[in-house]
Length: 112
Length: 117
Image 1: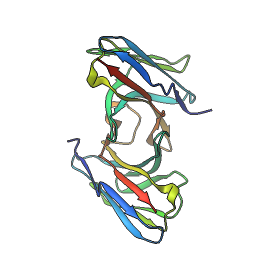
Image 2: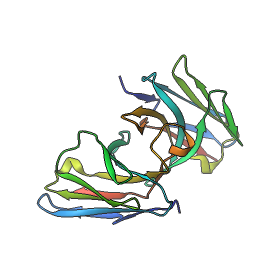
Image 3: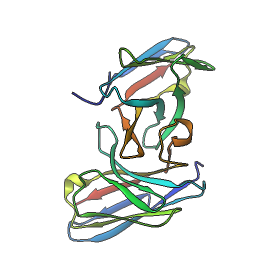
C-alpha cells in the first residue's frame, strides 16, 4: 500500500466550478499535513497546511480526519490559474527529524 | 523567488561522466534535502542534512554522493549514472527538522532536470 494515496485525475472542470480532492495516508504516526501545488515543469510550492479543525484560505478549504487518515482539499470558484498538480503531503517523525512523504499528485485542468 | 537556488537547471550526461548538482538556500534554514522526481511518480526523499550532518540516506545507490559543507550549501555528486536516473532533482530547505508543522515547512528550489544517455 502506498504511504500517501491520491486520485491521479485529471480533473477537468470549467471556470467557477467547485472541485474536491481526497487523500489517504497509511502511517498513523503522521504528525502534520500539507497541500503543495506543482505547476508543469516547476518545483512544488506550499499551498496550505492542514489543521485538525479544518482551515480555510480564501477559496481553498482543507480538512483532516485523523481517525480515517483522510485529508481533503476543496477549491471553490475555480480559476484558470488553479490548473496544476496538487500534492498531498504528510510529515512523519523519523529518527528525530522531519520526513515529508508525498502523494503522486492530482492533476487539475480548469478550462474556460 | 523561494530563496532556494539550484544549478545547473538542465544537465545531460553520459554514463561515464562525473558531475555535481549545487543547491544554495538564502533563508537561514538549518536543514536541507535532496529529492528525486521521476515522471508520474511521487517525490522520493534521497538525503536529509540537519546542521550539516547527514541524518537520512534513503537507500540511495552509492553513485549519488551528497555533500553539505555548511548550512547554506548542498551538493549532489553524480558518477556512473544509469539512464533510469534521469529525473528532476529537487533541493529543499526547512528551518528545522522537528515535527511541529510550520517550522518544518520545506521550500523547494527550481530543480535540475537530468538526462543520462
